Picture 1 (tube, rainbow, N blue to C red):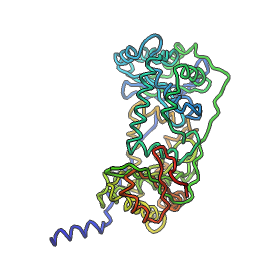
Picture 2: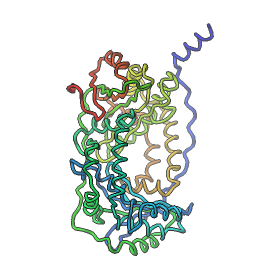
Picture 3: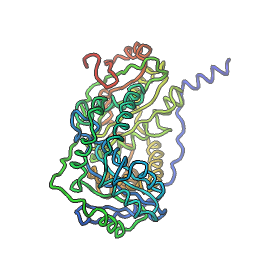
Picture 4: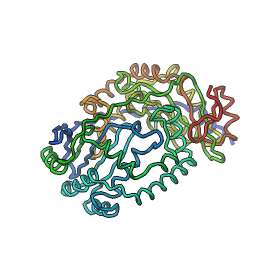
Length: 469
């Protein structure tokens, strides 16, 4: 019994752990970027990497969900998902078989601020895979029968998402941060049901236009080979006179602490997220915020995870990150907490945020250790053509400096404890943080009320069940 009490006392005291010595910085050289213009005026950007015989390619358009009609939210995404469901007279099964036989993939996707149609594969089947990609890009069939199947699946998936705590948190987070703006608008059963195959054809004709596109390529290819292959396949893809206006989403004001709760009766754990818009990557203090947050909550051995997981044992993991896009970035911490520890976990998060900007700033040892972690993890991100492509897309989409990747290691290495703490004090204002919780209100509600913050209950789509404070 004496030994047990001693162990408990030791765990509750949570002594500060010694930081491991930082590793020496690894060397990283970003492959050079080459550019050209196709005969139809589309710019091509290529980053060569001949270490492995693989390549990846995307035609990218800078446009987010702002182009969706108000009564058909999701039209952009579903149209893109239909491109490989039939094209050039080949049905979905034959298209899939063709790409599989060639050892590659062809498809389309969308992020918050862009959409793309891409392909990837081994170098020796580049031409054949590009034929399939060009067919999907230029000659989609939009078969109504395939849309009927996919439409039903989307509606069923949305119903399932309304029951999943993590999916609920993701949807509600968008609505809390961006409100009724285009980023905050949520997909609905009614919107999916309203979309027709003809709507998709009309969207495709209007928005998949080379006037607004760039082609990004990475991997084991030369610029001349890429340009020749693309000119041969895209010669008939002509530019219109219309241009898409760039938009930047604006977050709602975050000027006081609020706890938002979505009821999930019977939940064994609670999804807990902190929400706070911060500066974007054009701000000089972003690098300090980035590395300071890494020490605070952006790694396994960072403060937040060591507190909630290692010291308390309330969660399998907790992470904080800076989510970047067009406009202000979003700082958030995310964790799943056992139900009876939900309110204590919120208290701990509040304390950690207050401490890091006041009584317990980031230390020299933390900056040295987490700086070496970021530097040494960086080069490993660019071992594949798709990773190179993703970075090219980020630079083009957000008008980042051309040397953004090359300057990553020097900029991270230049962050000091003073610059990190200055950025954290500037952006992580404790009195402005909101907390989103998806959990069993009957069990967690009374303890949350004792925290002394406004508590607003929401439905699964983020709509208040009572007036906001």
